Length: 250
Image (cartoon, rainbow, N blue to C red):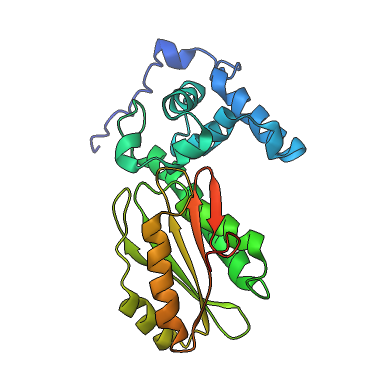
């Protein structure tokens, strides 16, 4: 008779396997309910129901699926002074705050970018640049918190619609070189009928300097010889804005 190996004996269950499963679910972390409550409040009552630190918490939730974001949000506000200054802070500055990694920094920096694109679309889609409030909103979002001066050009067609929006130069904390020849050349390339000049003052005060006034007059004279109008020069600061046209400087 051929040899037949004995069947394997079933393994004896371990002590853990012998115990019935615990029907009690693991407790949720304390921050879990907080996130749910914030989400429900936003959807039910709108964004005005959230404080500045809660807005920051929401932004950080996406970067950090687990953990209590309230302490970090409050630390950011205490360090920078306001929600807008947190969102405008440079990545290298944010990285020096304990708890801020690349994912958290990116979650904050995408907000002003999204806001700028939304404002730009609304400005361009307006029937004409007479929608002045939309232009100012866009300029404030994109330029008011820039750490250095930048000189922006809005090129308009004959119906005063924006056909191009370009930053021509970036400068230092208190100066931007502007080249009249390059401005006029670009306007001719685009077939622009008019221009709106915009630059920012990182100091926060929008009052035009003597250099701003002289540069604007030089540009106006050069552009008008070629049939290109300068509608306005707007200076953007954190404290507000100044319009050359409104001030009688154009």
